[in-house]
Image (cartoon, rainbow, N blue to C red; front, side, top):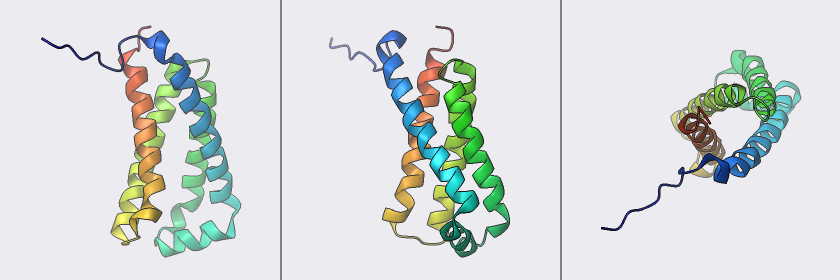
Length: 130
């Protein structure tokens, strides 16, 4: 029979993939967190979501997730925690976008980052003891 080699067969093969995802996501959430805290556009967006009281906490969680990912370059546990937290945060962000009936093109980035960080978390969990 034909055996398909699962993508997560050897952690050393995918170590560079995890590092690329960590740096990309970490830089993204560094930008998103700063933007969420200091951008007038984000103040308006959170009012549009009817979640203005959560803007500061969301920005801080994004920055915390970013820092956790960067620490995760040296400590897998930090990367696992940060990627799971960011995946959950972005899944909620996607649900908010759907709830307020934003077009998919506006909702897509939150879905993308939720999936990206969940994939990172799964890779790291799969090779937790390596």
